[in-house]
Amino acid sequence: IGIRRRKGARTGRAHGRERGRETRERREEARTAARGGRRGGRRAGVETGRRDAMRRRGAKADRGDDDDEDARGAASPVKAASSSLKAVRASGSVAKAKRKAPVTGGARASLASTGRAAKTTTKRRHVATAIVVAEEEEESIDYFGEDSEGYSDDERAPQYPIDAVVKVFCVHTEPNYSLPWQRKRQSSSTSTGFIIEGKRVLTNAHSVEHHTQVKLKKRGSDTKYVAKVLAIGVECDLALLTVEDDEFFEGVEPVRFGVLPRLQDDVTVVGYPVGGIAISVTSGVVSRIEVTSYSHGAAELLGVQIDAAINSGNSGGPAFNREGQCVGVAFQSLKDGDTENIGYVIPTPVIDHFITDYGRSGKYNGFPALQCEFQRLENPSLRKSLGMKPTHKGVVLRRISPLAPASKFLKRMDVLMQFDGVDVASDGTVPFRTGERINFSYLVSRKYVGDTSKVTVLRNGKVMTFTIDLTPHNRLVPVHIEGVPPSYYICAGIVFTAVCVPYLRSEYGKDYDYDAPLRLLHRMMHEHKEQPGDQVVVVSQVLSADINIGYEDIVNIIVSGVNGKPVRNLKSLVDMVETCTDEYIKLELDQNQLVVLNTKEAKKSTAAILKTHCVQSDRSVDLL
Image (cartoon, rainbow, N blue to C red):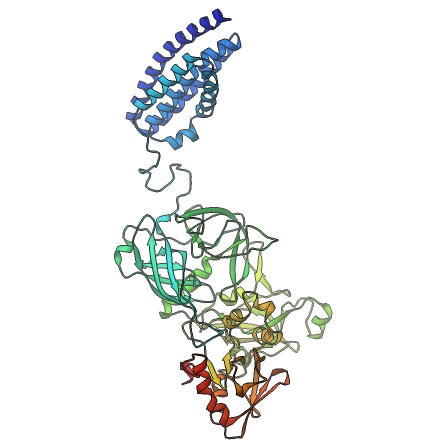
């Protein structure tokens, strides 16, 4: 056995010397090819790898036994792998060597097997050491790819303008809706935005909501630039920013917008989500396109569902197609125990509407709405009762806002058949691209505030057409009161305020639409303003004092009247209480509750109660 091993070792050294001469020749060829051009160098490296693989397969066929195989494997495969890898390195790209050189996988396997064989023989360890020394003598490799200019080396890979994606730092000071005479503790957040044409930055509205300071930082920069908020679109959850320092926009190509994607199109979301401080890229496909509920603005607008991960911090980041064009802005995701990988982006039609609206008037005016509620007409008996023929299609109007322009022309139980010449189906959908249908409210959202539209209805068997002005949705319970502090009034320790969605969220949490009292939810979702300025006024709480004993448990009860007069809004309540000359102030509350206070004592006690609870004023600034 010892003789056989010595003989095999001599054979291995002979093969090694021969392989060394061949390696030096191949290395010289690779250097020549590299000087001829990078692409030529790549082909030389790939060709060298192929020759090495063929030689190894031939050497493996000539092996006589396991011992000879181990001896030869200690010299030839390692040098072959080393020479092929160095030839590719000479071409200037390590990353492409991994993708394009067929020998790389086999060379790696040969290195692993050689490592195991080297453990059994001292001479094999000497061979491995010589190879390492030879490797160190080669020129250093740019493993960090500093010469790649931030783009992928693969010419076939999509190139995204990620240098235009910025990180948004915002300091928020949100009003305290439960204690409206003060504000909440200052908080900070990070999100994503991207540079567009006109030296502007686009991000989400909720990213800069209640902002006191906004700063932006570019990728690869250590400087934060103070930004100015130009417009905030609550319904579409978009905000437009700018930076006065022109240095911020230097050397950055603005992001271009693409068309609305189709199902199964690839999308890549870029942003700064939680989990790190560097930029992040996630990929997915378009899963669904339909009218979606926007959680921030409580609006129904066109939305695109994707399966790419959208986490906290991704908000405001662009979603790119394979051409590097922005096809959406990340803004929300659906996360519960029954779902996973459901994210939503704001599509380019909504983005274009927001930017165009701001460009037309210099401010954000919102999205228009018919301010009507509809019911589908799929039941045959219901259709016949409305005088519809089998060929007729449409939806029936079951409620119209009294203040909406449509109330001048449309009536309850009218059948809406067409909107701007587009037929409305009995399920409330209209054609949308090839083979798709979408809720007809999409047609309304494409209009601008102040535009007109033609509406065709069926009334008492007759077809009528009207031209209607379009206005924003004027809700009884507003979704936001951006830029305005909440209103309140205090009398005898009883705190009155007007209901809005942020107030309900402050009182009942993010699941307010389940936990809030049913009467408040009904007012929020189904009732409309009867007169301009109408509000839902409630007793928010009672600051305990001797004068209001017995009323401490009254919380969030609607105030319907004062001394027999209806309460239309908070200002009317203040006027009635302040001008009351009766002996008693009688507050008529919902559910037939009654609060009675002595007029003189109630007004006299207010100052002491305010001092006890550290409240500066008995009313908000708008009521002074």
